[in-house]
Length: 100
Image (cartoon, rainbow, N blue to C red; front, side, top):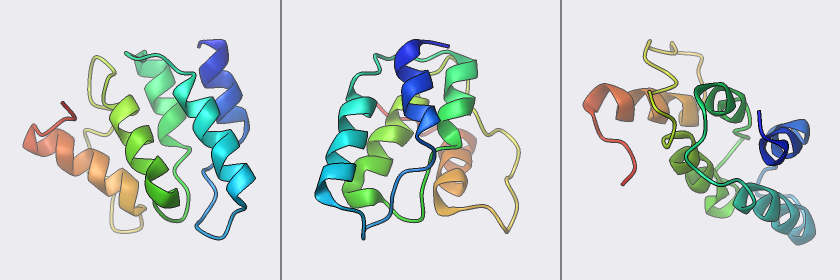
């Protein structure tokens, strides 16, 4: 796993909408430092970093980065208790609608 991915993953899930602007900007910088395509291992690690909401659109950037992996990360239905972003990843993979 690349150092940029390790640094992003080490910070844990994305913050919610109530995080400070500085915290969100810091996470954006960490995310933007990751060059795609990512490996399958990196995509799995990044998929654990979705937070409670879309983090002012940052979750979409994370989703699109995850989709640069060679194969979909969530091929099995994540179940009814899964978060919105895991359901989106699975739904997009199942429908063949990956990010451009």
